[in-house]
Length: 165
Image (cartoon, rainbow, N blue to C red; front, side, top):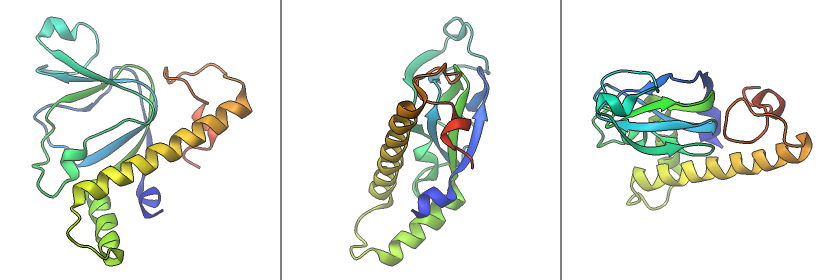
């Protein structure tokens, strides 16, 4: 529950560069709704013609995916290893490194086995948040009959689903 208290909602527009390869990043991002592409080897933002700039698209991320986890790890250097660019409107939750550290410190107080590293704890927390979001998406779809989705990845309108309230 502590992780959920620290998450902050944000909405990005299509073509927004969330993180840029080689630039500092100090947050973990959870995609609630929307679609993003992960790019390597591009110079600047925008989502049109990136292949022509020499960029390589590595992945497509959407509902319940997350990125930026290396930046919050204790052994991470805080530098983004790839760029993440919104393809559609993206409703995300952000957990900054200072918030992540606070959550992990609180978890360590209750943990019996301190040999479990922070990476495992982070992955577990991410899976829990993703599962809770999936359950919320399914419940919202049942109550809204599949209305049009401006976030481009299915699911209910975030204003109707209560995100950010």
